[in-house]
Structure formats: C-alpha cells, structure tokens
Length: 98
Image 1 (cartoon, rainbow, N blue to C red):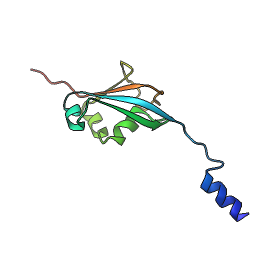
Image 2: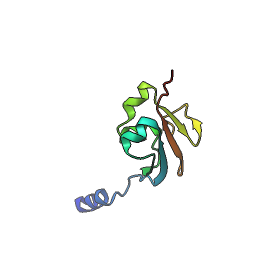
Image 3: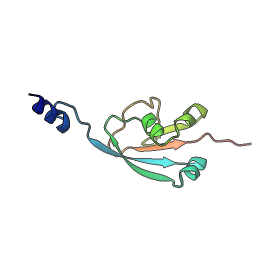
Image 4: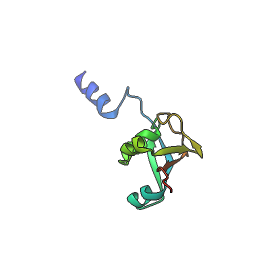
C-alpha cells in the first residue's frame, strides 16, 4: 500500500497538470534596455497572467510606477486574467515628455 502511494506521488497520479503555452513579451524603452532585448518568447504554464509574467522577470514593482500592459494590442484592464497560447504581451513603461 505504501509503495503504491509513493509511486503515485512520484508519478503525479491524481494531480492536475497544467499544459504549457507560449507567449511573446514585447519590451519598450528603458525596459528593453534593462532586459537587453525588445522581444522574448516564453513558455509558461496555462493559467499564467501578465502579472505572473512580470513577477517572473522581476518587473512587477514597475506596475505601481506606471508600467502598462497590453495583450494582443489592447490595454489590459485585468492584468490577473489568464493569458492564451500565442498571446503577445507588451510591457509599456510610462512616457515622459516636456
């Protein structure tokens, strides 16, 4: 009985597994300079949000400083909404002018 339970635990039997999806991150301005690139293709677990993506890349603190997020060309009003496979996620730093 114990051996069977350990086998199931090791093999993940009874757990729900998320499938992986791919999204493309677009970075602009100083954010692109900081990351060293303007675009990154990322594999993430299904259910990931744009906020989760920002946390993964260490830019979530910028959200409170005016960083905007656009998903598939539309400003995101709910950044905790799960992303879809193939989504294009743009991180838009605040623009200053004078």
